[in-house]
Amino acid sequence: MQGANTPQVDPVRVRKSLLTWAIVALVVIVASQIGLGTIWREGIIRPLLNGLLVLYAYLGRSFVVAITALTLLLRLITMPLQIKSIRSTRASAALAPQVSELQKKYANDKERLVAEQQKLYKEAGVSPLSGCLPTLVQLPIWIGLYQGITSVLADTPVELMSLGKNVYHAFSGVVDIIPLQGMFLGMDLAKPDPTSLVLPILVGGTMYVQNKMLTQPSGDPQQASMNQSMQLMMPLMFGYFATQFPAGLAIYFVISNVVGTLIQWLVERMLGPAQVPAVATADNKRKEKAANGSRSKAGKA
Image (cartoon, rainbow, N blue to C red; front, side, top):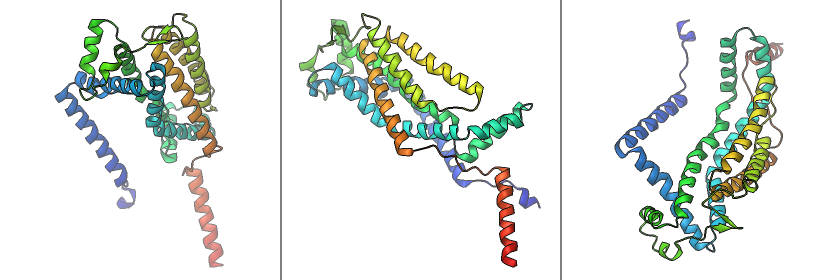
């Protein structure tokens, strides 16, 4: 009896947990030895900065074309995360009826409700937080691009000296392209949109369309209200940021949102209608046990 009640240990899950903690420990050790400032500069700022310079040098010396190419490249790199996020969001939406039943069943027991919801997501192999992963990954890219664009479009002697320190020594062609042509349609790409309207509206509008496609309908009224608020708040917030950011970064947001919307549309068409994940709930287990019993009796008969 004691052996029957002993919880079973999943070796695959144990290995994943050990690997995760080993990676976290390694990152902490490396960060403490090298320094966060050095990691940020060498891992984010310099690669983005030099990438922009190389694309500018070999793609017609147009900064907008360089930003477009860099955006497409970054989107291709992060595409697996976005596809995984889309799958998880669709699976979470498919579980909405079961979540609604749990909310009704445990309306007066919040702790039990949270435990049952976590159990449901776990059995279905769904992570509600995976939808935030692409945004978390892109956050350091946004900050790095902000610093990279302002550095690349340097025009004063002091800024040019700072830029020279961040250029890779192997890139000898940088001498022929500096200073860069940072004007586009009468806008200085190193400064905010002078109209304070065109690019902010484009940023907010494209982000609203992308969020509208990404957000799945929810059977929970509270969650649906939260989703609707986020659909409006995020575009408004980034639209305001676009009035303060360099125009080059605003153009990156517009292109990234458009590409993300296209990826969302293509993935939705490829996956087809959302399917409810197979969950081994207690009711399903009882039904399966009863069905097996019926088959066993029929076989004996």
